[in-house]
Structures are given as structure tokens and as C-alpha cells.
Length: 282
Image (cartoon, rainbow, N blue to C red):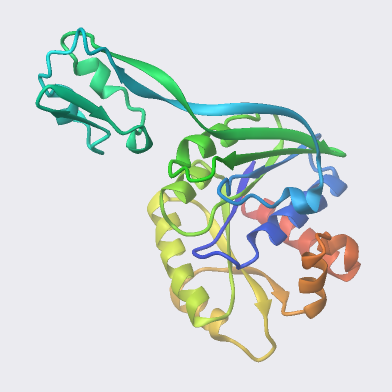
């Protein structure tokens, strides 16, 4: 079972929800291994809370074109096929821009002189480890790197077996998010009861509807008497599966890198109920 925790914007509490959910699942021993996948590769922070022991690191890269000038006839076919201007033929010179390359391999395939080979360009690393019976996997994108989807794909594909996978997705609704949640059995959309939060939730709902993924909403920092999120979800016809109160103690525990279900045991029931509801909908 793959459960992705996503949102239309940053700062809604995806990591808080996903780390505590994976901890609860491991404590209940629903399966032999529970896997936490931090796909927010630009700024992963799940490790600050789960505190795993890292025991494996691997580099992830993509193939980019290399031109053999002795064979190249500067026909320009490579530049014609590239949709991202990662390779351009200018008179008697072929320019390559590896940071723009999406590693499709099209330029090498159309080259009549076989003047294009490929070399690997490192995007970042994947680190794996364990916290008790929780398998921990996250990706760390190189500083300044713009191509996060290949690294996210590598994180998603780096575990297998009969496990519960909790995916901590990047914020937003662009390519990295779609790469992270694609193929999920259920998507939990975390929002906050503010106009900004609900505006971006609307975009996230459009995204999961387009992908055809089962989903529901969790309202974080819910305030007594504030029904803006409930009204919005009622109008959109989407279920609110859980609410986390706006409790200063949660923010304080989070700032210390503590797990909420351990620091504030009274909230353990909310996460147990949340996991049960997700399982029922699957």
C-alpha cells in the first residue's frame, strides 16, 4: 500500500503528518516493515524527526550527451529533436547544456554519424537507513540542481516488498509532486484553514482528480469556530478525514524535532484513527 502525503503549498505540516503516521503504523505492526520515503529532495527533513541510522548511500545521475567533434557533421538534427534546447547546433559548433537535459536519449538516436555518446551527470544521493522496524529512504538533491524528478523516481523505486509505504511529497502541484505521488493507492492532502491554504488545496485537488487517485483532506492547525476549510471541502465534495488542532505544544515539540505521538500521547489516537480510515478506504 502506497500512501502519499501531499499539499498544494509548503508549510502545511506534511512532514509532521507523514512521520507520525509511519511511526504509528510501525508501532501497530500492520506489516512487517513500514517504509518512509522522503521525496521532498530539495529540502528533506524527515530524518530530523525519525532520526534513522543511515547504512547505505548511492549516487543518482542521468545520462547527458557528449559530442565527438571528429564525427559530427553539424547537421542540426540533434537540436531539432530536443524540446528543451539542451543541445544546439550553431554553425560549426554543437553546444550542450546538461542542466537542461531531460535524458530522453533522442539526440543520440537521430544522429546519422553516431557522433553523440552519453555520460552520467550526478543529480544527488539517496540515503537509506532504519529506525527500529521503519525503513527510511530519502533523496538529497545537489545544491543548485533543477532536475529533481529523476532523483524522486529513484527514491520511489528504491524499495520493494510487502510493506506500507508512506511518501512525503514535495509541496506544490508541479512535476516533482506528480512524480512523487504517481501510482499511489491513496493521497492525503494536508491543508490549513486559511485563504492561501485553501487556494492551493484547490489546485492540489485538481491535480489528484486529473491523475485519478483516491484522496481525502486533513486539516492541520484547525481552529475552533473556524469552518472555512469544512465549507470549502463540502462545496468541492471532498472528505475531511482528520483534523489536527491548532495547539502551540505541537509547534514547540516540532521545533525540537520530537514526534508528536511521543511528546503528546493524547494525539496518538488521532493518528491511529487516521490510519484506520485510510485502510478502510482502500
